[in-house]
Length: 141
Image 1 (tube, rainbow, N blue to C red):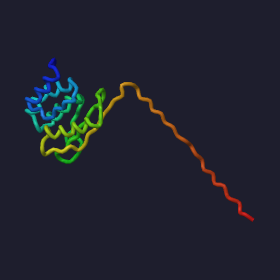
Image 2 (image 1 turned 90 degrees about the horizontal axis):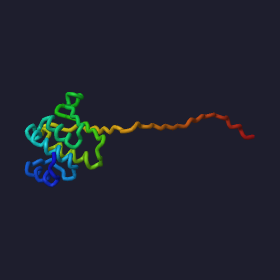
Image 3 (image 1 turned 135 degrees about the vertical axis):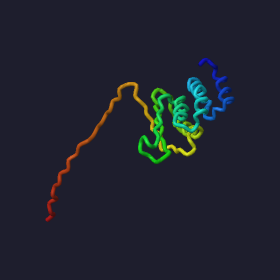
Image 4 (image 1 turned 90 degrees about the vertical axis):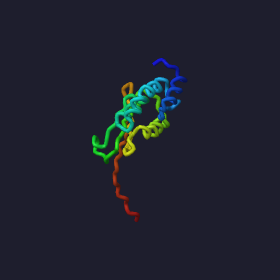
């Protein structure tokens, strides 16, 4: 919990944390390193996927194919992005890293992103109304 960032990077290399990313925040690095032993021990299980992804996105859920009626050996990941810094690059990196710790026979059916607003949302809607009137054109004489 109190190691410096350079030491975390060294330990991740020494312990072969293949899904490590140097651009993670210090807290994400600490959670990733802490969970790496569990992930290595349970490689290929739903629990390893949840543990590894939760280091970066703490409120992650994984649904297996029989829980949502999908094709056998499929799974979905639900990422809660609330309160995290998000860029288009991060979910792509998560997808690449899922390949390290998922079962080889399993395939990712989809990812769902959730972002909850910290303040009440305001929905503004507008519209227009129209009317159509048919007027006969008088014949020219």
